Length: 420
Ligand code: HEM
Image 1 (cartoon, rainbow, N blue to C red):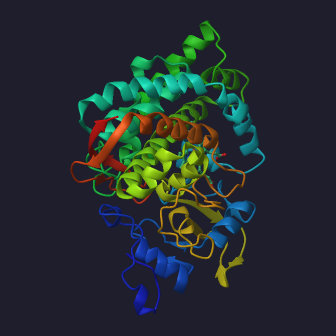
Image 2 (image 1 turned 135 degrees about the horizontal axis):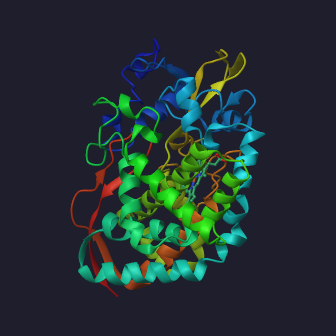
Image 3 (image 1 turned 90 degrees about the horizontal axis):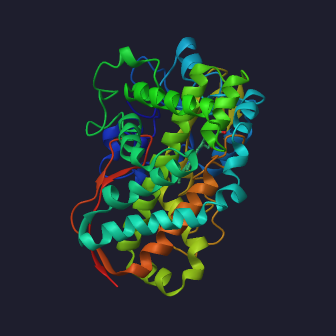
C-alpha cells in the first residue's frame, strides 16, 4: 500500500505499515510529500478505503479548525474504519463534534486548566523526586521502565485519586491497548491476528474490559463516598444522564491512556535528544531559565501522537485538491512539526527555539489536547529535578521503538548515569 501518484520520487511511500516506523519516523518521506504532494491519496489494506494524507502545517491547521467540513463524529479519528455500531459503542469526546463535544468536554475541562493542574505542582515534584531517587542510583537502567513510564501514571493516579499501588496495573493496561500494533504489548496484534471478537472495544484490545471493570469499582466507591476528583465528576455525569454506561467507560479509558502513554514518550524522546545533543544538555544545565522554551522544543521533537483523522462532510478543496464528502483525511502532526516553512532548520534540536508554535497537542481547534497543561508541567518538573542530579548520562544500548504508525513511542532506552 502506498500513496497514489505518478511522481516516481514518491513511489513506494507507505505511511500505514507500522513496520515502517520501527527504525525511526520516515521523515524523508514526509519531507518529499510536503514538497511534492502535500495532499495526496494514500491506499489502505482492505476493508479500509484509503485516505488523503495531509502533511503541511498550514493544511493541518485548516482541517482542525474547520470542524464543520472535517468532522470527528461521522467517521472515527483513527485509521481504522468503524461501522455505525462500533462508532456508537466506542465513542469518546474525540469522536464527537460540537455541541455534544462541548457537553462531554465540560465534564472535566476545569480540572485540567493551568490553575487546577498547578495546584498539583508540589505533589508532582515529590513523586518525581521519589522516582528519581529510586532509579538513578542503579547506575545502569532502562530509562523508560524506571523513569519515563513511572511518572505520568503516578501523576494520573494522584489526580484521579486512585491508589498509587494501582499504577503498575494501569501502565500494563495502557501498554496493551495503545501498543495494539506491537507484538511486545498487544494481546492480539491488530494487523496480524484476528481481533474481530474485540471490535467493539477501544483499540480492539481485550485489556479494555479490565479497565472498564476498574472504572466501575472506582465509580462505586464514589457513589458511597463522594470525592472531589475527576472520577467523581464522571460519576455525577453518569448519574445525571450526561454519560451512559459505555460513555463513562470510554471517558475513563481515554483519560487513562491519553494521560499516560503520550507524556511517557515525550519524556523519553526528550532524554534521548538531550543525550544525543550534549551541547543542548549542557545549555539546559547551565541555564535553567530556558526550561520553558526547552520543554516546547522537546514536545515538538517528540510529537508522540503522529496523526489523527477526520471525515469530510461536504465536497471541498484542500491545497488545490478536490475532496469529496465522505472521504477520510489524515493529518500528520509529525510532518507539520517539521515543516520548513514554519520551523527554520526543523531537524535542529534547539532548546532556545522561538517562536515554536508546534502542533504536538493539536493546532487549537475544539479538540485541542485537554491534558496539555498537565503534560507540560510533568515534563518541566521531570527535567528540572533530573538534570541537577546528573554528572553524566549516556546511552548504554540500542533504543527500541514501538511498532506503531500512530504513536511515536520508545519502549526501551538503556542508559548509564553518574550522579552529581
Ligand atoms: C505530551 C503529552 C500529550 C500529547 C502529545 C497529547 C496529544 C494530543 C493530541 C494530538 C490530541 C488531539 C488534538 C487535535 O484533535 O488536534 C489530544 C487530545 C486529547 N488529549 Fe492529549 N496529549 C498529551 C497528554 C495528555 C494528557 C496528560 C491528558 C489527560 C490526562 C490528555 C487528554 C486528552 C484528551 C481527553 C483529548 C481529547 C480532547 C478533545 O477531543 O476535546 N492528553 N491530545
